[in-house]
Figure 1 (cartoon, rainbow, N blue to C red):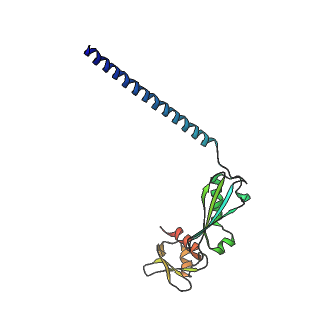
Figure 2: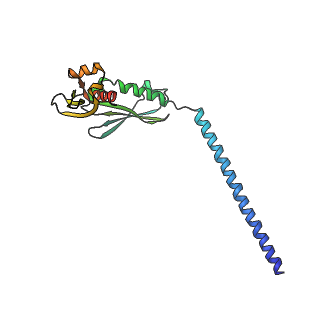
Figure 3: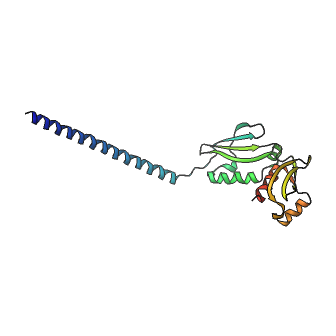
Length: 198
């Protein structure tokens, strides 16, 4: 009789374990299937929709002063030229403006334009300013080692040393440096360094 109870107990224990693990694996498989379906739905939605701005999109323009580290923001009417654009198209507009800012921005010391946030409902753009970026004049000179140095025109102080060798520059640039190549503002200095640094 005792043997029967022990055998029954082990059979019951075995069946309970089978039921527990069977339900666990069935639940786990169901969860994985649901997650896979959700991912498919998300990917399909992402593939079929592209975000465009509209005249209802909130437009925020940030202005960052690199000299004082001050950031201000302004909520403005969505410019007509930004309506109906995708993120990539808006980035193209920003890059084009960055290369040729208007005179008002130049006077304020405009140095850059960037996209901070993009959605159909809201975009945030940031203009960065650094007064003096265009104001001061600089001259490229040759140091004792044949390298180019950039000096301020007014005081003659060295603004920066470079690793650009005079004899490695194109001949037209060499001639400009011999005559005292002048650069109006740091933007032109940075453009020069970017173009001729190795």
